[in-house]
Image 1 (tube, rainbow, N blue to C red):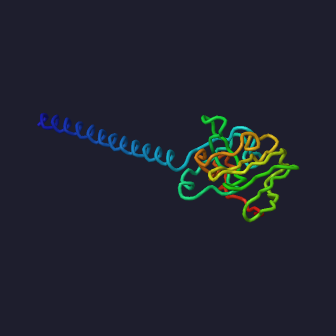
Image 2 (spheres, one colour):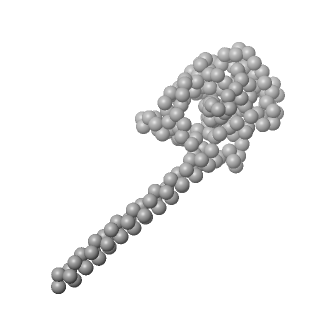
Image 3 (cartoon, one colour):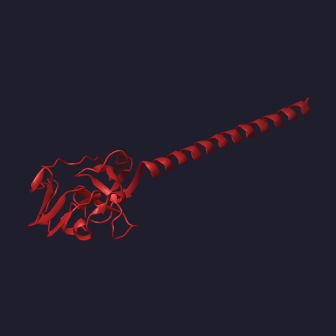
Length: 198
C-alpha cells in the first residue's frame, strides 16, 4: 500500500511541475507577444520624446515627455501651426521640435519683428498672429518654399535655432507631430493646432 502512495506522490510532483512549466511557458508567450506589439506600435505609430532645450517655451518645457504621432502624416500633409519632430538639415542624427509656420509654395518673410506669409490667398502678404507667443520674432530673412518644404520656428523666438538660421526643412525630414504631453502629470495635455488669421 505504501508503494501505491509513493507512485501517487511522484505523479503529483510531476503534474505540479508540469503545471508550473506550462504557466511559465504561457507567461513567456504573453511577454514576447506584448514586446512585439509594443515595438511595432512604437516603431510605426507613436514615439516618445523628451524635450531638450528652451526653444519651444512656454508651450513645451525642458524634460516634458511627449508622445509623437508618426501615423497621421502618412495620410495627410503637415498643417500650419502643428508642432513637429524632424531631422534638421544641419544634423541628420539629431531631432528638433518646432512649429510649422510656412507651407510648401508660400513665401515667408521675417521683418520688423513680424512673420509675414505670402500665398495665393494673400498676394500682398499677411502678418501671422500667433497668440501663443510671449515675444516678437527677431530676424530679417525671406524664403520662397519649394513644393516639399516647410518653414519652422520655435515658440521661444529669442532662444530658437530654426528656419531663420538653417532655412526650410524638407517634407521627408519630418518624423511626426506632437500628440500628447505625458509628463509631468500636472501638465498632461492633448495638443491641437492653433487657429491663424490666414
